[in-house]
Amino acid sequence: MPLKNLVADVSGMVQGVGFRYFVEQTAVQLGIDARAENMEDGTVHIVASGDEQRLLRLVELVRQGSRYSSVDHVDYVITDRCA
Image (cartoon, rainbow, N blue to C red; front, side, top):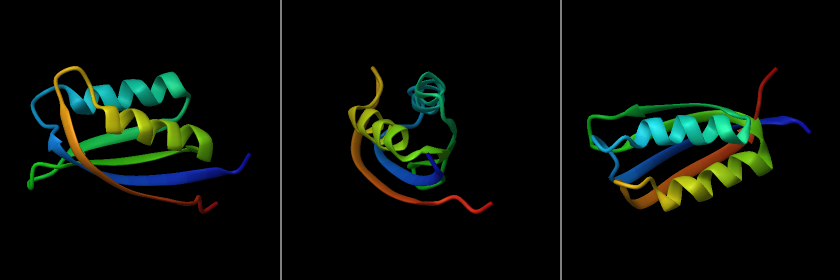
């Protein structure tokens, strides 16, 4: 299966609650590579790569959030990965 790239921005109560750790650990469990970064506007920016089904599953789990987070909105795009 060809690899894809995911770029997502997550808003809500997602900073200071372990959300970045949750995203990165969830990605590891799904077998994909992901990085999450706090942004100045209070959102979390996610960049990930893997097969499309696993990336979509990551988006689903990100929408649910972690134990202490509260996700309001997830904007994301999945694109073909450049070689």
